[in-house]
Amino acid sequence: MLIRVDRDSPMGLADQIANQVRGALTSGRLEPGGKLPPARELATGLDVSMHTVLRAYAALRDEGLVELRRGRGAHVRSDVDPRAVGIEEQIKNLVASAERLGMSRDQLVRRILAVPA
Image (cartoon, rainbow, N blue to C red; front, side, top):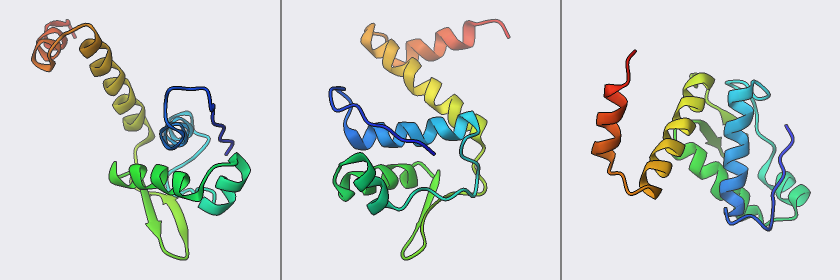
């Protein structure tokens, strides 16, 4: 799995790493049960702090996508549905777009419910 960071991006490095892992899941480049690169190895390859990688992995763990096992590394949970990961990302982007437009979450939900199936 290839991960890159853009130091000029307004998005933090840990967020970029976590987003790329999510993207690898939704695209099929990383499968449920798959092993993530060791934090130290990935940090060296990206020229970032190991703590940056660990923050990304912790965020993915908190989302229920990754299991962190001391001495065994980080693995994608075997019960993760990659399609659901993609939907969650789309929802986050939709909510962020609505907030930028000044729309409340309640207004957004009403508009979603009004869309014909």
